[in-house]
Each structure stands twice: as C-alpha cells, then as structure tokens.
Length: 190
Image (cartoon, rainbow, N blue to C red; front, side, top):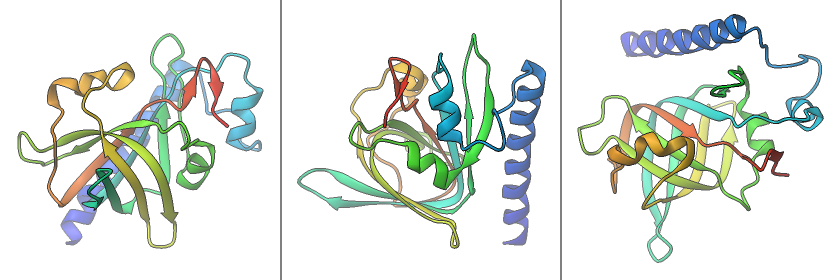
C-alpha cells in the first residue's frame, strides 16, 4: 500500500511540475494570487477555453437511477486541487482548489468530462459523461458526481471519441477526470 501511495504521490508531483513548467515557459501564471479565481475570470476581457483535470487514487461507478440512466461517480483520495490549462494560442496553465472549482461550475448547463482509468482493461478504460451535480468532502478527499454517459463527443474531448466505451468497472484505481471547458461564447457560466 505504501508503494502504491508513493507512486500516486510521484504522479501528482510530476503533473504539478509539468503545469508549473508550462506556466513559467509561456510566461503566464494563474493570475493575482490575492484575488479569488472567479473574480480573476470575470475581470478578464477575453476568457480562454480551459480543460480541467482532477485525479484520484481510486473510484467507484454505480447506477443510481435505472430509468434516467444516472450513475454516481465517486473519486476516492482525490487531489485537493484541480489542474487547468488552455491550448493555443493562450497556453495558460494553473490550478485552483477543487472546492473553488466546484463553485464556478454551473450544473444547470452540465459540463462534459472524460473519465480515464490508467490501468483499465482495453475496452473498459474510458467513458465520456455529462456531469450533473457534485459534492466535495475535503477532509476525507472524496469527490462525488452524478453523471450520464454520453453517446458521442465533440469539442476539446473529441480525442476520446475513438476510445469511448459504454461502461467501466464498478471499482477502479488510478483515475483522471478531464472536464471540458465550463465557458460558452467566452463567458463564465454563472
């Protein structure tokens, strides 16, 4: 178990170092550290499209409403920060607390996300979902979403189209959740 925790810790450090290097290399930091993230975004005149990444040591995937086909995704030992980055031409990168991230998401216009299991069996390692609601237990590092599986995907998650599956195991380890931008037409959904 200690070896697995060490591997997860190294993985998290590598991602954070990569984000920091991207931020430094592009000359862009995540804004004014004294100003709340939401205020930074609203103060910006030209808001880029972000992809957000949440990682966890393990997870669970369970059907909770058969008629509506709603599932509960539970990310266990989730990182307390959500990584974010943009593609060209902006090339911004940074992170914010997962709690702050969930405050800016408008679940009345649910974001799409790709759930990728690092060591999942071929054919059962990626699903693309619509995130319907969330809860974050910071103390226990448990991040929960209700979600629906999407039959097709486009936009910044389109790279997952060829790998999309109709299902994943009920329990899994080493997971990343890639959340599509929560901005539409250059405006933060609020």
